[in-house]
Every structure is written in structure tokens, then in C-alpha cells.
Length: 293
Image (tube, rainbow, N blue to C red; front, side):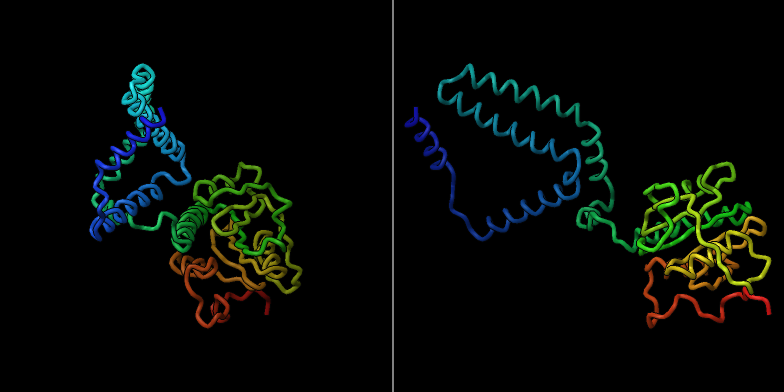
């Protein structure tokens, strides 16, 4: 039996042309590279990864069945081959959505660019998407006079988010609109955002104790100013009475008359754009006056 297997393997090796040239080596590298791209783009860290492992196992069983048939173990070989055929046909039905997605991707005009692109989104692109979601929500808040208070903070060691309701959810316009809807339990508190995540909502912030602060600013504005006084956070606040949009940094408030300027400053706050000379994101002469003369 062992001698038969050795003879069979020797015949297979003799049938193969093992003379490699530089062209063959380049072709092998190209095939390996294409397979790696397909794996990295469609299979890695997905449910299809188990499918690929199963496919390799089926290939192994198919080779084993052919080997058994050649060594006159036809019943066992045909049995394994039938199982492999049946399972292979079943996989086409089971993984029909994945195959449809693959064919749809290959049918796109720019699929080559997408195939060679980085599968992980650039952090700046993700932050720009976050800004878009926030600006859309603020636009609605301002138009409908819905009060809102959003805290942007990188260092969560000095914050008050733990007294709110933990969310750890992706930033989205719909979620922000839901949180600050007047009929929801969390609308009176602040939302704490870290990166592209809403860490918590319904957070109670410290109020500023500045006795010279103008009387026209309500609790949300005082909380935004107070939070920016005791931390490095930037606090965005939308007035419920007037719909005005402001951001407080280092205890100073800046009012916005247009969403373009707001978007630019949010890009600076979240680190999307490089801040010139590493200075503060705002010029002091652009701030509105908070204190009584």
C-alpha cells in the first residue's frame, strides 16, 4: 500500500514540469497578490472567512477522494467525492448573497480602484463624516429652535460623562435628533462625543460661576461655558429660544451666523484640518462679548 502511494506521488511529480523561469515566478507572485487582495477586501474579519476555510477542506477531500479511487478504494472514494459535490452545490445556494455582492462589485466601473484602495477608511474621512452628521443635526436644531448641548472631548479622564446614560454609539444625525427631541428623557442634558462615538447622553455639566456673565444666557450656555472652563473640551450649544448656534472654548463663547464657518471650526476641533502655528482654533477678536461692560 505504501509503495503504491509512493509510486503514485512519483508519477504525479514526473508528470509536472518543474522547470521554472523568471516569468513563472512573476506569474506566481501576481496570482498570490490577487488572491491576497481578494482575501483582504472580501474575506478578512468577515463571516466569509470560515467559508474559505471550509472550501479548502472540501478541496482536500476532493484530492483525497481522487487518490482513493486511483488506489482501487472506489466505494470510499466515490462516497467522499459525492459528499464534496453535494456540499459544493449547497454552498452556492447558502452563500448566494455573498456571491451576488462579489459579482456586483466586479460589475462596478471603478472596481479596480476600490480593489487596490485601503479597506480601512482614513481617519480624516471618518471625522469629516462625523462633522457632516453634526452639522446636519445642528441645522435642524437651529431651524426648529430645539435646544442642544454637545461636548467634544478627547481626554475622558476629566469629564462628567459617567453621570449620564452610556451609549457608545456612532455619531449620526438621526441619533442626535432623537436624543435632543423635547419629549425624550435625555434632551435636557449634554451629549459627550469622543472621536466618532457618542459616549453618553443626558450628562449634567458644571455651570459657570462668572458673576459678570450676561443675564441673557440660559442654563445650556452656562453649562457649556462652565465645562470649557474646567476642561479642554469644546462645547457646542444651540439656543432653544433664539436658535443661535455657539461654541465655547476656554470659557469663551463664539456665535455662528452660518454653517460654513461652523463646519470649518468643527474640522479644527476634531483635528481634520491642521491648525496653523498650533494656536487656539479661534481668534479672540471673533468672539462675541459675554460679560456686561
